[in-house]
Length: 174
Figure (cartoon, rainbow, N blue to C red):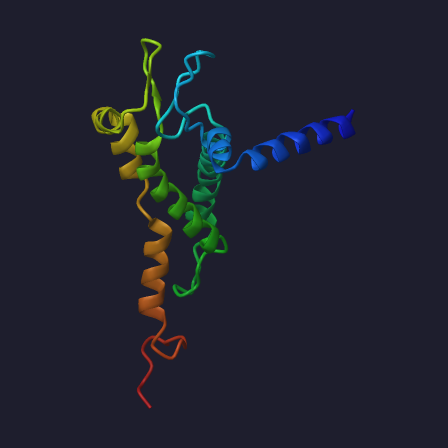
């Protein structure tokens, strides 16, 4: 059964890549013209039901869960005596900040299912909806402050000079 599933997946991938770029974009992002004969609604931007957007939503959820777990740990237990020492998760936190900052403009390129059952893929309307609803753009903007990058920047500017050596406080010049 597993072999059959693998063969089916291989056939699907071969079919998609043989069909070319247009098929790959349609399958991955859901960007396609409307098809009147099959009744499929087209999308000029990323379809919220596409596999790509599903991966983005899953990644967002995992990173939000990570942040909810790791931030209390950082505030409670990782108070170092040496102010020039970064958190052990600093690099991953910086990558998480980048993801959340990129997610803000990304939301302007994803279609929206309206409450009336209609699908909207008009960029101006999506931008208006994002700016109008406080739970979308404004909440993301306020909560996506790159704190890990600010922390790293302060440590770099205070603790390291041009030679990349640690400065000691209250040290007499040579």
